[in-house]
Image (cartoon, rainbow, N blue to C red; front, side, top):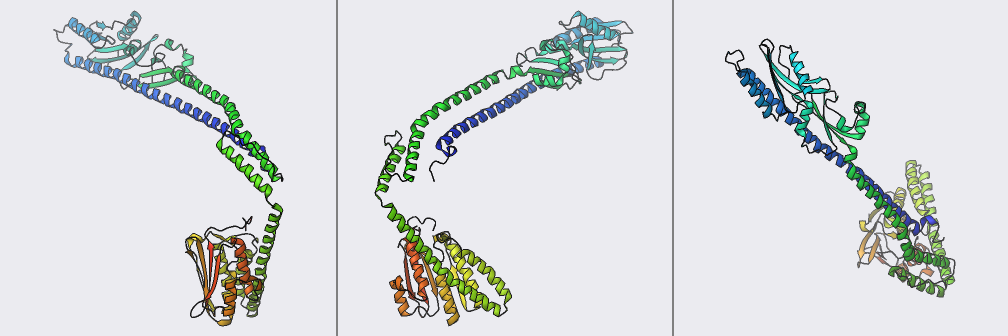
Length: 557
């Protein structure tokens, strides 16, 4: 295979993708930040102005409540039927009330039966407004007190009015809504914000000229909500609503500056990407391209290729020096002889493993035959399932490694097969430490010893078979295999411990093949000893490195 398969997998494409990803993340981050900032700004402005609007509405309600109380006191404390009732003095008291309430509220008293009418108006009331309200009171014939403050639309003006009725007499107060807005001339709203009064249905009661709006535009709710932030607070003492209109253009003026700065920043980042890429290309990508090209030539068999060692980046310079040294060394190796030696070792290892497999196939067939003769069909079914697991394990690749856990499971399954054939003839004890479960070993390493134990159990009667693992000298793992059978004959024991593999015969072939496989797998870095226990029984101890050593190219053994 080539080191460089396609352009989409190159470092160049990953760097370009990285820059584009950074730009996309920056773009999304700034966009999200702008959206959140906009929402936060609108929320803060809305909350601040809503609180201020509530405060102003509360001020107007407070004035209305005070005037209500003052009017009620006048009606209760003044004896209008008293012969000594001084109309002029009463008129002066009403004038004092006008001044008392910020010269915004006007007061009136009337007794139609006696022809008495007193009007004391605030200084900013126009003649038209005074005439409109006077005509209303001259025509007033209701013989009851008004329910709270009334909202009157007379001509082009609107008023808030409150009166008390007692024994044919009226006493009340009123204020022009135009004049009421002047109570808030010192408001803390933005300069473009407009404060108006509306009724409970949202209809304007004061002029819209300050907004530059027609009444049709004001009635278009969708358009108004798009162009203005609309805040409204209801009065407690009347059906009046204090409404504030703030143009979104004013609110977002400063935010638009931030938006412009965002786009300028993104444009600057976008312009910097090609510049940064050119710098990286000269410092990293071009040297890596040289290295990749040289590696492809080496792969094609050209071991004379060299790359420059004058790179600015230390890591790349080190890679160049290391590559040149490696190329020079490979050029002097006898590659053909080395590959032939590896091929021979693989062939020998495959032959040794295949030598083990047919030996057990015959035993399995013999067991099934014997069970069938005894018509033990349930045992045959159980045995067949166990053999499926066994043959699946045996059909693994000759160079595939297995974990110690898998090997123990295989031995357990194999011995279960034999226990079905020889019930109550031998007993198994397998002990595997958790630390070693995933360690890789050659397949069928322990199989031959389990097979020998089965043979002795079939001939010599009951046998206990044990396999355990432990740490030895901190660098090796000890696998100990033992049984309480007759043990090894002296001449066999001597032959096995001498490990004269070429002269193995009979039952020793399986053990000799196991030793050969250990030697190939661990490059000789292992130890195996054979002995007999007292009073009887065989004992085999295998020492293998904690970190398995894969011989030559056998990385997938």
